[in-house]
Length: 178
Image (cartoon, rainbow, N blue to C red; front, side, top):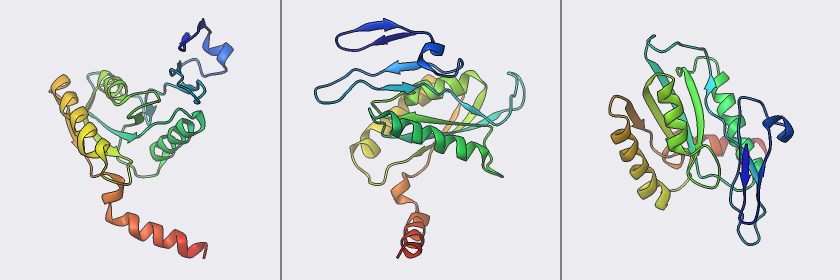
Protein backbone atom coordinates (compact mmCIF):
# COMPACT_ATOMS: atom_id res chain seq x y z
CA UNK A 1 0.00 0.00 0.00
CA UNK A 2 1.49 3.32 -1.01
CA UNK A 3 0.31 6.55 0.51
CA UNK A 4 1.20 9.68 -1.37
CA UNK A 5 0.71 13.31 -0.41
CA UNK A 6 2.19 16.47 -1.85
CA UNK A 7 5.26 16.18 0.35
CA UNK A 8 5.53 12.55 1.37
CA UNK A 9 5.18 9.01 0.17
CA UNK A 10 5.13 6.05 2.54
CA UNK A 11 4.31 2.38 2.24
CA UNK A 12 2.04 0.66 4.75
CA UNK A 13 0.30 -2.66 4.90
CA UNK A 14 -3.46 -2.60 5.34
CA UNK A 15 -2.93 -4.27 8.72
CA UNK A 16 -0.69 -1.39 9.82
CA UNK A 17 -3.41 1.02 8.70
CA UNK A 18 -6.03 -0.96 10.60
CA UNK A 19 -8.15 -1.79 7.55
CA UNK A 20 -9.79 -4.95 6.35
CA UNK A 21 -7.36 -6.92 4.17
CA UNK A 22 -9.86 -6.83 1.30
CA UNK A 23 -9.92 -3.04 1.38
CA UNK A 24 -7.31 -0.60 0.29
CA UNK A 25 -6.42 2.79 1.57
CA UNK A 26 -5.84 5.82 -0.55
CA UNK A 27 -4.60 9.12 0.77
CA UNK A 28 -5.97 11.92 -1.31
CA UNK A 29 -3.69 14.88 -2.06
CA UNK A 30 -3.73 17.54 0.58
CA UNK A 31 -4.49 21.14 -0.22
CA UNK A 32 -3.90 24.31 1.79
CA UNK A 33 -5.96 24.27 4.95
CA UNK A 34 -7.26 20.74 4.32
CA UNK A 35 -5.43 17.88 6.01
CA UNK A 36 -4.63 14.69 4.18
CA UNK A 37 -7.27 12.08 4.82
CA UNK A 38 -7.43 8.39 4.34
CA UNK A 39 -10.45 6.81 2.71
CA UNK A 40 -11.18 3.15 2.31
CA UNK A 41 -11.56 2.02 -1.28
CA UNK A 42 -14.63 -0.09 -0.88
CA UNK A 43 -15.21 -2.32 -3.83
CA UNK A 44 -18.63 -3.89 -3.81
CA UNK A 45 -20.89 -4.90 -0.99
CA UNK A 46 -22.00 -8.42 -1.84
CA UNK A 47 -25.47 -9.75 -1.29
CA UNK A 48 -24.38 -13.16 -2.56
CA UNK A 49 -21.55 -14.55 -4.60
CA UNK A 50 -22.46 -15.35 -8.18
CA UNK A 51 -19.70 -16.90 -10.26
CA UNK A 52 -18.89 -15.46 -13.66
CA UNK A 53 -20.96 -17.18 -16.29
CA UNK A 54 -23.88 -17.47 -13.88
CA UNK A 55 -27.13 -15.51 -14.10
CA UNK A 56 -26.88 -11.81 -14.98
CA UNK A 57 -26.11 -9.56 -12.06
CA UNK A 58 -27.99 -6.37 -11.30
CA UNK A 59 -26.05 -3.71 -9.42
CA UNK A 60 -26.72 -0.36 -7.80
CA UNK A 61 -24.15 2.41 -7.52
CA UNK A 62 -24.91 5.15 -4.99
CA UNK A 63 -23.02 8.14 -6.40
CA UNK A 64 -22.30 11.04 -4.07
CA UNK A 65 -20.14 14.12 -4.20
CA UNK A 66 -17.29 12.88 -2.04
CA UNK A 67 -15.36 14.61 0.70
CA UNK A 68 -11.83 14.86 1.99
CA UNK A 69 -13.29 14.18 5.43
CA UNK A 70 -12.97 10.48 6.23
CA UNK A 71 -16.08 10.44 8.41
CA UNK A 72 -18.18 11.58 5.45
CA UNK A 73 -16.78 8.81 3.27
CA UNK A 74 -17.44 6.27 6.02
CA UNK A 75 -21.01 7.52 6.30
CA UNK A 76 -21.61 6.83 2.60
CA UNK A 77 -20.07 3.37 2.94
CA UNK A 78 -22.44 2.63 5.83
CA UNK A 79 -25.39 3.83 3.74
CA UNK A 80 -24.41 1.48 0.91
CA UNK A 81 -24.08 -1.37 3.42
CA UNK A 82 -27.55 -0.57 4.81
CA UNK A 83 -29.08 -0.53 1.33
CA UNK A 84 -27.32 -3.79 0.45
CA UNK A 85 -28.76 -5.44 3.56
CA UNK A 86 -32.27 -4.07 3.16
CA UNK A 87 -34.99 -6.67 2.93
CA UNK A 88 -36.42 -7.16 -0.57
CA UNK A 89 -33.95 -4.88 -2.32
CA UNK A 90 -33.51 -6.20 -5.87
CA UNK A 91 -29.77 -5.78 -6.39
CA UNK A 92 -27.11 -8.47 -6.34
CA UNK A 93 -24.43 -5.84 -5.67
CA UNK A 94 -24.51 -2.39 -4.09
CA UNK A 95 -21.57 -0.02 -4.27
CA UNK A 96 -20.89 3.54 -3.32
CA UNK A 97 -18.87 5.83 -5.55
CA UNK A 98 -17.69 9.39 -5.29
CA UNK A 99 -17.64 12.22 -7.81
CA UNK A 100 -14.44 13.62 -6.31
CA UNK A 101 -12.17 13.75 -3.25
CA UNK A 102 -12.71 10.11 -2.18
CA UNK A 103 -12.39 6.61 -3.53
CA UNK A 104 -13.74 4.67 -5.24
CA UNK A 105 -14.53 6.89 -8.19
CA UNK A 106 -17.57 6.10 -10.28
CA UNK A 107 -15.33 4.47 -12.90
CA UNK A 108 -13.57 2.31 -10.26
CA UNK A 109 -16.87 1.15 -8.76
CA UNK A 110 -18.35 0.42 -12.18
CA UNK A 111 -15.26 -1.48 -13.34
CA UNK A 112 -15.35 -3.59 -10.15
CA UNK A 113 -19.03 -4.44 -10.59
CA UNK A 114 -18.67 -5.24 -14.29
CA UNK A 115 -15.63 -7.43 -13.60
CA UNK A 116 -17.86 -9.49 -11.29
CA UNK A 117 -20.36 -10.02 -14.09
CA UNK A 118 -22.90 -7.21 -13.73
CA UNK A 119 -24.87 -6.64 -16.90
CA UNK A 120 -27.38 -4.17 -15.46
CA UNK A 121 -26.24 -1.18 -13.43
CA UNK A 122 -28.50 1.44 -11.89
CA UNK A 123 -26.81 4.69 -10.87
CA UNK A 124 -28.48 6.80 -8.19
CA UNK A 125 -26.95 10.30 -7.92
CA UNK A 126 -27.31 11.34 -4.28
CA UNK A 127 -27.36 15.08 -4.95
CA UNK A 128 -30.08 17.40 -3.63
CA UNK A 129 -29.92 20.03 -6.37
CA UNK A 130 -29.25 20.05 -10.10
CA UNK A 131 -25.88 21.80 -10.05
CA UNK A 132 -23.05 21.32 -12.51
CA UNK A 133 -22.24 17.82 -11.22
CA UNK A 134 -25.79 16.61 -11.91
CA UNK A 135 -26.24 18.52 -15.17
CA UNK A 136 -22.78 18.09 -16.71
CA UNK A 137 -20.36 15.81 -14.85
CA UNK A 138 -22.63 12.84 -14.11
CA UNK A 139 -24.08 12.63 -17.65
CA UNK A 140 -20.53 12.79 -19.06
CA UNK A 141 -19.42 9.99 -16.71
CA UNK A 142 -22.41 7.87 -17.73
CA UNK A 143 -21.72 8.44 -21.45
CA UNK A 144 -18.07 7.43 -20.97
CA UNK A 145 -19.14 4.37 -18.95
CA UNK A 146 -21.55 3.27 -21.66
CA UNK A 147 -18.77 3.57 -24.25
CA UNK A 148 -16.31 1.65 -22.05
CA UNK A 149 -18.85 -1.10 -21.27
CA UNK A 150 -21.13 -1.46 -24.32
CA UNK A 151 -22.53 -4.81 -23.13
CA UNK A 152 -23.75 -3.34 -19.84
CA UNK A 153 -27.13 -1.66 -19.51
CA UNK A 154 -26.45 1.46 -17.42
CA UNK A 155 -29.50 3.35 -16.17
CA UNK A 156 -29.28 6.67 -14.37
CA UNK A 157 -32.02 7.62 -11.95
CA UNK A 158 -33.07 11.22 -11.35
CA UNK A 159 -30.95 12.84 -8.65
CA UNK A 160 -32.19 12.57 -5.07
CA UNK A 161 -33.61 16.12 -5.01
CA UNK A 162 -35.96 15.25 -7.89
CA UNK A 163 -37.51 12.29 -6.12
CA UNK A 164 -41.12 13.18 -5.19
CA UNK A 165 -40.88 11.00 -2.07
CA UNK A 166 -38.18 13.30 -0.66
CA UNK A 167 -40.65 16.10 0.18
CA UNK A 168 -42.86 13.64 2.06
CA UNK A 169 -39.87 12.21 3.93
CA UNK A 170 -38.56 15.68 4.90
CA UNK A 171 -41.99 16.77 6.12
CA UNK A 172 -42.43 13.57 8.08
CA UNK A 173 -39.03 13.89 9.75
CA UNK A 174 -39.54 17.57 10.59
CA UNK A 175 -42.96 16.83 12.09
CA UNK A 176 -41.48 14.11 14.32
CA UNK A 177 -39.03 16.56 15.82
CA UNK A 178 -41.30 19.61 16.04
